[in-house]
Length: 350
Ligand code: IPM
Ligand code: MN
Image (cartoon, rainbow, N blue to C red; front, top):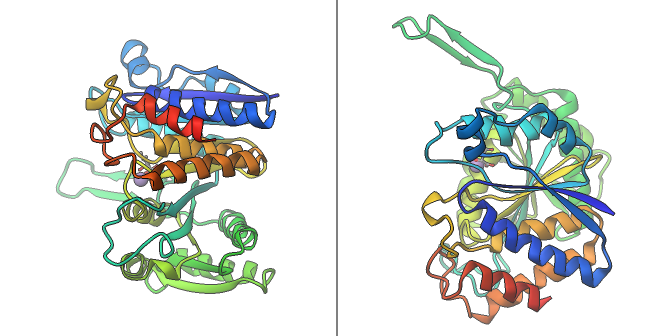
């Protein structure tokens, strides 16, 4: 019996979470997977009412779960940064969810802005380091607010942090068995300390994977190739900041935020799944937002829990629906169906 925590969150978060869990539940029933859910009321509304962002008691409970599902975080009346740092980044760091897994897959029937590229060209996975780099929060100000001000934000790379991240990426590349190519996306030519360590560890761990071909792509060139030759990529492993940036580019080439899903994983313990998109406050309660990314994240949750067959069914149902051409446009309010109806279609398609 799995225990799954739900953080529906802000804006359209609850709507997409409902559809994601509808499909999760339908797939679980077919496969005989037993689970219970616990809902946590965290997000902008709670913060505005009580001043609490993520209470320690909730954080402690999250540690004991099998998986967490997050809808979206972000509230128009809350200063940017408070909820992102206080909820999303805090869970990632405190639960040591050191992998952020972001598949970039163009489903048949989905338009991509890349000219002359199709589903056979756009199918790779980005493994983003999720607990270090420029996100570690180490730094500070000197003489803040004066003309002599100094601001420092450190890029932290630890041997352990890089090692476990790249090892995960090698394992994933092997398991995926597509072209057996792992690309390190870094800036080793300029960040000659932080990414020197990154590259050395990438190569060192690579010695344990003689069957995996190593490629190197400097981050700026990576963005160029993701547009020009996305078919070159199989699995990309990268640091936290670069991963943040290139996965938004990845989301766009796979058809946009309506389809991009992700998982924050600690392969040894709990994991948190979420669509990449935000809380889209202006669509709140309208039943117009596209839930496909959210449903995709629920599929990733099944995979993480060890139910590859159920995960494959969810992915196939999404893929079939998109290929059918029923959904006119992936954008909110333009689908030709409500949020709920899209959830129903995917659940039926299982
Ligand atoms: C993401 C988001 C977050 C990040 C923000 C909301 C803190 O952009 O998940 O990519 O920067 O990691
Ligand atoms: Mn981002």
